[in-house]
Length: 367
Length: 187
Image (tube, rainbow over all chains, first blue to last red; front, side, top):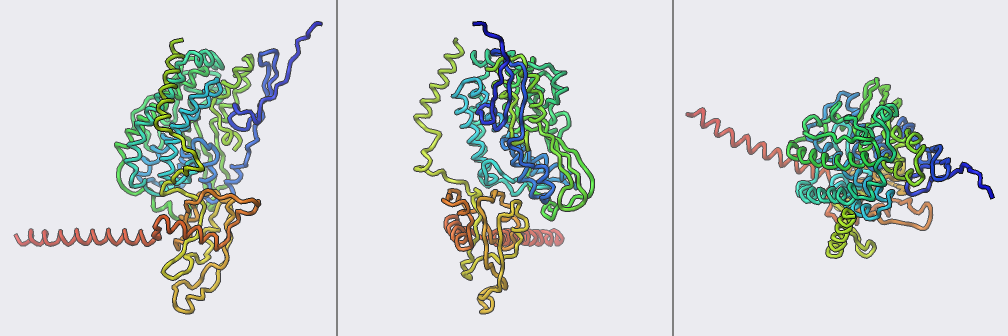
């Protein structure tokens, strides 16, 4: 019998565990090779941007918690900064430091989750357990500070909700050495593992020019060798006061993206240590922020560095207590736009790793 | 090859460490303690001095709830007519749909009467779809449990005490400075 070569259709998702949420890809395959990809998003669409138009300014923070549900503090920060910029509101110094500490801890938590899941995608079960142990420690600290493990609603327009708890210094002193161990452990067990290297090296490569064209930001862009980080390029909050490096990859393949994220955890630890040394005493919320928030008519565009890349908020106000329009530039949506380019001409088995290395959060892609 | 062995050693070491001091808990048997600031389901507090709820049904929390999960109504306070209470109005009916509640804590922050708290209750399940619609007596029960377990003091009372202490400290500092200044003038 003569077998004709036929293109086959392979449906991946939306309930596939390695699509990191509800994301569906239709793969046209020729044998083991992917010929074409059609991504389907929108399974987690909740209409957050539209909902923002109907909520008062202080209620929108809860919606931002639920957009990128792995890096909640980073999301709250960018929204609060947008409203503060529109109102010309000065944030107390202590609040800025509290925000930076929490955001960097959240960055480590998010990257630890990434390390765990990329391990799973590449076929290693153990790193997941290690990574989740570290992430759980951070979340316990978050619970002590904000009262919730994930949906904090802790940042306020003009500061934070309440001061750090009295035992915070002891809690963070206990946490940091353990966290350092966790980060080192997750690095040691995975980054230079032979099997892991073979699975990730030279897989899903993208050049710096192409990455910029696709609108890559964050670790995905830095993995290609572009030294771009909003914390350095356009320092917001108090990031200009800390000494930290931007880790940069070489080839823009999956392993470089992984390596950049692991190095970023060390840099975040550095920032936290410096912030803890510098943190001043004082108020944590501006007295203006406690009143009914009614920014003047106008628009503002504010960006910040999320663990996944550059998140930006375009806020249009018409002078009422609810925004006229609120647009979010989600980092993982822009990173995901290159999925077709990355997957075409690669193997089916690599598709999971490539998707994992982009580190998408569907809550933010669909909003 | 060597790398894989190294990784294996790390896993083994962690296994022994885990056997010695486990990270996980056997959850239903060993409940996880919550932090003092933990935000569980909202509940209404009970004023033990007057023996009535703190809540006056003023609707501030209801108007500011992002999910509109609450409803309430107020009535004239019978205890006020008898002269036992300073509250002219009191809550008549209050309901929170805990299925809708997103535990954001905005209601607690905005309440002017210390009437609502985020309790430590988080393990609640029911057999019916609308079984999580909790009415006033049940909310007060959760609140009373929370007050009992955490020795709750109304936040406004705490803030007042703190301010008084600060004022007293300031006054004491001013007093101690004055004699010193007077002494200097005397010289």
